[in-house]
Image 1 (cartoon, rainbow, N blue to C red):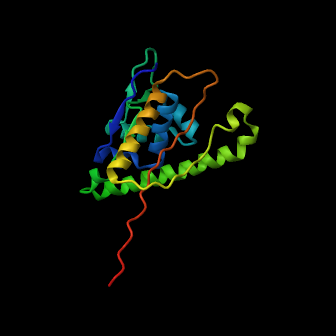
Image 2: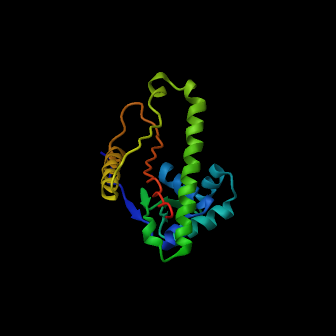
Image 3: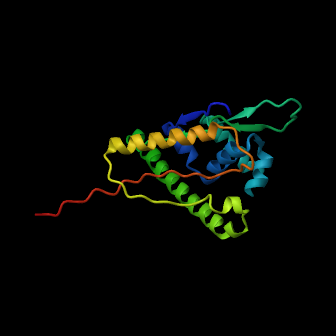
Length: 193
């Protein structure tokens, strides 16, 4: 079994720093592929090393990434993510308009990224090996739950996801993007009398 997953509940400062297109991509790469140099990340993300180095330092100042000591590394700095997962709750940022705006930006980024990943899968699924063709999918359910029930259900589902994330990969394993969303319908407004 893999090591225990590390988790951070984002502070106001961390969420503000993370709400940037290059920074979120840098953190995602470091989480997904492990430690890298600014030069390697710049090549992967089609940007320049100067911008990559600057944004890595911003992430480091916020405690989201750290330099890694590598013997014989010379002038190359290696960077790593300091946690496997991050989360936030909107209510944590009510007193900070910039952090609240960062939440909206991050969630919009996630939705757009999901659409991109889903479209890529749909367009390429015919070329997938038979054992993978029917593994991906999207389901939707309309449930009627109290706030407590919704929190409980989400917590249970996250426990299941974390259990699989810690497990040793099985034969033929590959990376999987798994999204979990629970979006309460807006409260109905009372008709004026």
